[in-house]
Picture 1 (cartoon, helix red, strand yellow):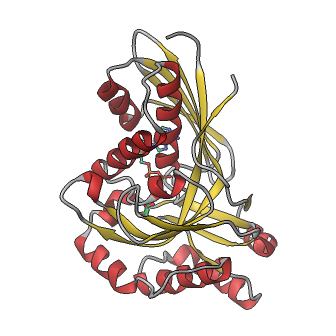
Picture 2 (picture 1 turned 90 degrees about the horizontal axis):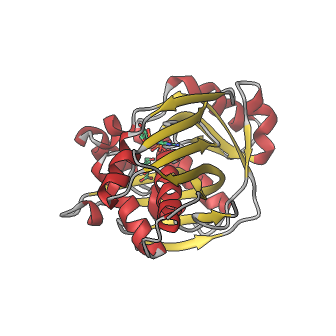
Picture 3 (picture 1 turned 30 degrees about the vertical axis):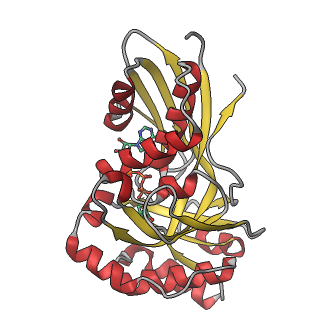
Length: 282
Ligand SMILES: Nc1ncnc2c1ncn2[C@@H]1O[C@H](COP(=O)(O)OP(=O)(O)OP(=O)(O)O)[C@@H](O)[C@H]1O
Ligand SMILES: CC(C)(CO)[C@@H](O)C(=O)[O-]
């Protein structure tokens, strides 16, 4: 138990979702679909007498922002009976609908498992990560999606709820204006009732179908903030597929919308990530 392990886990942009409540965090989650993206969280874990967490976040303009402590990560390590110095680096802003909490948990667990030789399987890591997200109301389906790659379509809650993944060559881009407090949305019965009513019929099998279902859902869900409406309108006028990043104050669009999104803020190019969490060479 010495040295340092480093892992990466991809982010996830949820296109549409509906909350499914089970009898435990394990069986609670969401159905829906989203894109696993090539920007995520890198976590470095070094055994230490005391647990500490340093979080490098990103502003919407891409500047680094360092903060200290993460209740989620500290609780995770305590539950595993280990102490470590953890440093997480997010490739996108936290809280802005990019699934950074799921990525942080998956990356931290993957590195912790390696450096402490805990013997956890990838499935066990995903299970614990999912239960942690649901217990803290920080996500419902991001872990299930980000545990693999591609466009993940979920028809049941929990980590076994992904019933299809496809890997389009299409690339996307995104611009964000800030966060939406996830627990306020997924913890609200009224909002969840409207989200459920907006849930699209049928499952996407192509990138275009996914983008169109995401936008139909966003419009019907009542979740679109006024701040992003001009961006969506500009994409519509140019015939660019675009929707709202669930749950963040932002837009994601097909890659040919990059110039349009750049006219509203700092747009970032994103690719579909072909994999879930991975250990990196130290
Ligand atoms: N990179 C990170 N490193 C450490 N802790 C993190 C990180 N990202 C998120 N967290 C923890 O998860 C909590 C909730 O994050 P939140 O769900 O708002 O972000 P997100 O997953 O990016 O948003 P969304 O769920 O809308 O995609 C944060 O308050 C923080 O404690
Ligand atoms: C609830 C959610 C949109 C938060 O990112 C996501 O976890 C999902 O799609 O279930």
